[in-house]
Image (cartoon, rainbow, N blue to C red; front, top):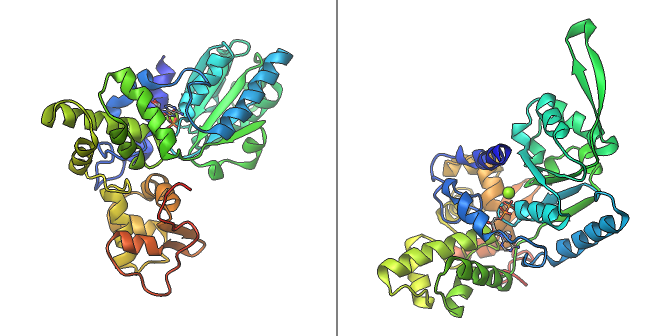
Length: 368
Ligand SMILES: Nc1ncnc2c1ncn2[C@@H]1O[C@H](COP(=O)(O)OP(=O)(O)O)[C@@H](O)[C@H]1O
Ligand SMILES: [Mg+2]
């Protein structure tokens, strides 16, 4: 699966450009590390039933798939949107598996020219799933070709150059496009409109992550008790990829420094070694909050300025750190810039100035 390889490496380049923090090794990065592909494949749920959480998306998707199956046609094109590590790629594969068809995998950055897409499309068999990861990064000419393909199962291939160029219409078998994006806002209107169904992936509750961890521990043969699982779940930023990774790091610690069983004290000690704090924030998150609070007095400050202050790329701050800081009620995105909430000040052990808002999200519990 060559295109699969490309999709996965492309998945990482966006974030690896960051300099100061080695995000690639950061234990709490929601983006897959280089060596993680294999273990992630092992841990991927294969059916909609074994897919934990996301009750809304799962039910909606079930209806879309079931109705298409009844009518004997490929289902509408599906867009999956949400932060990294929440199961978009897994769901795309599950869709193909549930439809009993094959999946072709590519990614927006790999589709630089219309010809790249034409090659993918002309290789499809009837009913196939075409998965385009990071679809918001698709190049313009390819995107325009995709409109026609999605709507009429047809592409116009331009042959030759200059005045002698002709366009040859090419039929493609009916297929289902599954697009994944971490930034649905960056999608053009016409592209978004051509999806029949959009699944908005949400962060997982600690209880759901406990279920994910239970399944993963049993697949990987890791001894961990209920309390240990709950502790990892609580610190995994609502993200299965992170939960699974912390589980493996805890396993390492348990094997080397304990008797191999991940109990609560073992989990706590292990996560301290990896710099994962009580709320599941890592060094970069804390640096972002710290800069926001100490250097900019709580904001508002633009994301680029904030990124420079912590020596990171704005996309990393925006797509990796912020979704969870917002979710945890510590940071707010306002039209004038990023603002720290009272909870952020308190998390850093500081007294928030009286005018700082608490927002409605700033409750002690992260998931209610
Ligand atoms: N709902 C889920 N149930 C169980 N495991 C999951 C679930 N969602 C994600 N995972 C795990 O997290 C990892 C990352 O998921 P992935 O589908 O690659 O996320 P995304 O494509 O959104 O970045 C996978 O290896 C999978 O094991
Ligand atoms: Mg993915």
